Image (tube, rainbow, N blue to C red; front, side):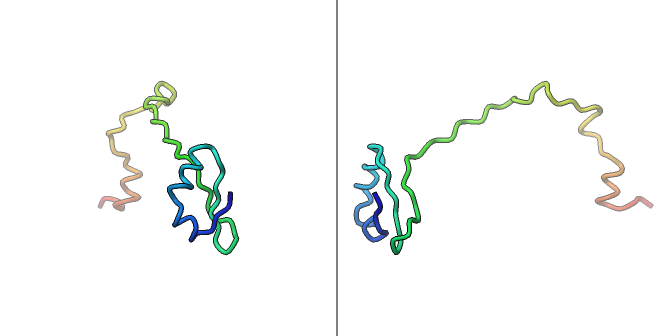
Length: 77
């Protein structure tokens, strides 16, 4: 079903109910389709630790790197 913006404003509750029942609803402006009303799909929660054991780093992450510090702060005198 395609409805114009003014009709969609007046009948928003009905349009939401139609989408909930599985119907396709498109909102148009000047007879140009602009927006499709769709059911909300909640995002899945991200699972932490997916890369555990897959990444390796040699050294201590807390140690500063002289070369990087020189790029930011310049050479020490």
